[in-house]
Length: 277
Image (cartoon, rainbow, N blue to C red; front, side, top):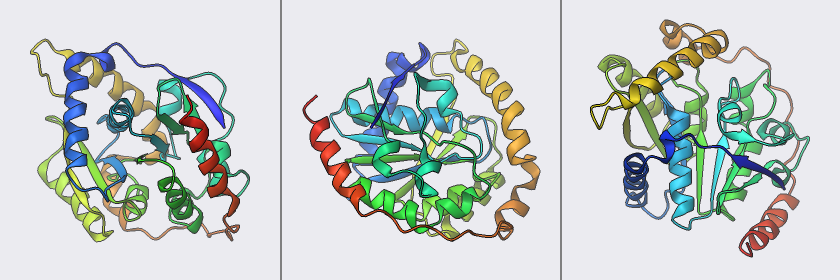
């Protein structure tokens, strides 16, 4: 198992914000005991879905729940650059193409009960990999070990990946930036999740100025600059969302290697080892 230290900004350690995520955690728990694999997506880049996914996973971990955050934003992950410190060589891509075992790509973090699977190298066919048998098998194996699995996915208004992942999860959370997304756009994204058979747990209204001091204004400036530079290149323009989500995959799907049945045994061993900490 790999190890990594997570760097949290001062804003993410703010008392009011942490309390808000504890409320979100409680709402997820009240959704039912069988809701354990949760995907997080947004309409467009820059709405803060990765921050929400990490904070929710952290909230579960701090409550004593063994939690893993899976970075399924394989086209352009921001999780590595924003939170990771240290050396992590292997990611989700290595597992999905059959090069590494699932247990080898999981990272134990310095936050008790919190584990992370980083995305890894950008593959040419992320939608096919996330919709394949190996990813489904990986989720089932992780359910045997972890109490909660939080899956960070790309914005659904830009690419179809989030819908592909959502139908394999127990529930989905949609993150919407305050005063940024139109009702019709949000409705189209919600309809896309419905068509995929996803169970909507609810919506997180993000970047709300809760103290009147422009606290989230800095976040909005930072995210807009960061995502505008990178997501625009990898996901295309926001106006192309309908064409992208309705288009058939153009990449020929390669044959998938058979899932390694030893993964579950290794994960069970790691789970027992983790409880000793």
